[in-house]
Image 1 (spheres, rainbow, N blue to C red):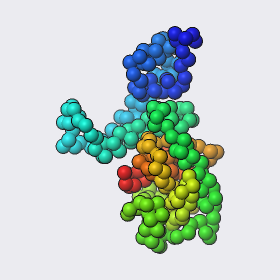
Image 2 (tube, helix red, strand yellow; image 1 turned 135 degrees about the horizontal axis):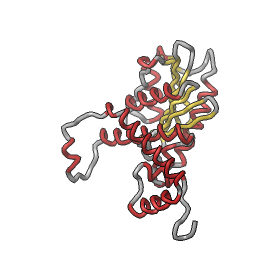
Image 3 (tube, helix red, strand yellow; image 1 turned 45 degrees about the vertical axis):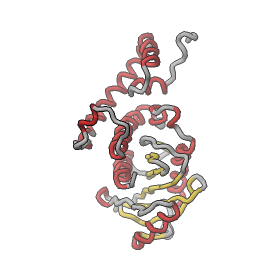
Length: 260
């Protein structure tokens, strides 16, 4: 590449596929794709997958009385609309994750939304799962029969008023209990669940005032899978040695139940 046509990275191609580029950058990428048919075919495949994913999950959309405001100037966006925007980004991430095996959202978001602290979350979630999920007698500090106490205790340590422990029984996972764990050197919460087959998963919650909201991200280490996201100051990670589809369903359910 010469100076007039600088190097095009994979991140640039992902951003183009998801409509994240301005006019100048988009024109540059289109010129590059015109000269590189293999990359153009790959980008076209991504765009087709994105369309299919959005169509598949279109049933999650809900009509609201405020919909006419979509065509009118407005200065603010409601919390509910922000959450749906994040969820929509997550669907694209899932599709790209299956193709690239990378942390999809890191390729989709603008640089100012990428946080070093968020990248530590999946590794800490994996470590917590590895250490505690194999325990037979002491997997947690407080068991499910003291769920109210567990939520109150961990809520105070994380400065979360009325901390809600996700109910995953409709998905086949019963709460085992939880414990206090360090997340980025601060108090964090870990909840453990188990299904009838004895398979366990953990939900990690940590607070960091430097966080910025991100869409879902995916990390994999051997047989261990993690879906994680940042919502305001809070980071969440769902980890388990279960199928990616099952874990994704659990992550989506946790996202719906945790407060914004």
